[in-house]
Image 1 (cartoon, rainbow, N blue to C red):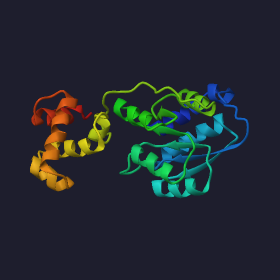
Image 2 (image 1 turned 30 degrees about the vertical axis):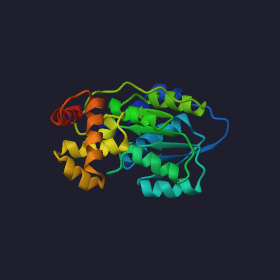
Image 3 (image 1 turned 45 degrees about the horizontal axis):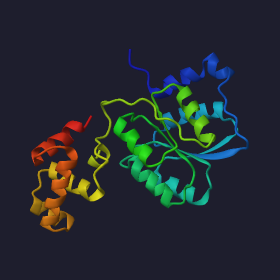
Image 4 (image 1 turned 135 degrees about the vertical axis):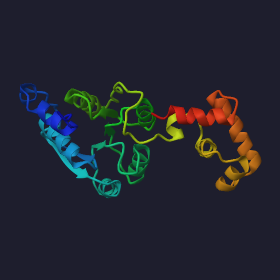
Length: 236
């Protein structure tokens, strides 16, 4: 028998007596939220849950970051629900773009990516909560309860690895590195020499050597090969 997909699983849970009988959240006045999700089946199922627990919520939907930016620029949303992966864009870039477009609402990530590094990065970016798509509906309810009360919801349990998820960038895997050090580290992982890195990044070779020295120190390794191996081994 083929495994049940998340949308069908959620629909089954919502049809149970427990969800028909209760689980609603109280809000002082009608509020408007934006749900950014590029997978329609998942988005429709989560919208169904929101209709059950927040019947006074007015929900706008966007399938792309560009359309979401247009919406937040013109509508003062009180809540934004964001899928971490939107086509080739990750949540970090999406959050930055939304803020630059004028979004001041609390952002709750709703994602199938439950790796610790991703959750940690989202938390560092100031998200109000993080909900796993694989979780029980109660996780979304608890998270929204905290957020609507003006709090940051606690992060859910994470997993070390999961098949089929996008590879993580070194900036996510090693958050102690500065953006420039991350640039140098990426080139190191590809096997580029100091001279090649200097030319690629438009900096001096002595500056590259200085960055490499700090990177090795930060990672706790002694050689470039060890640093490259560490980056590859850290990928789920």
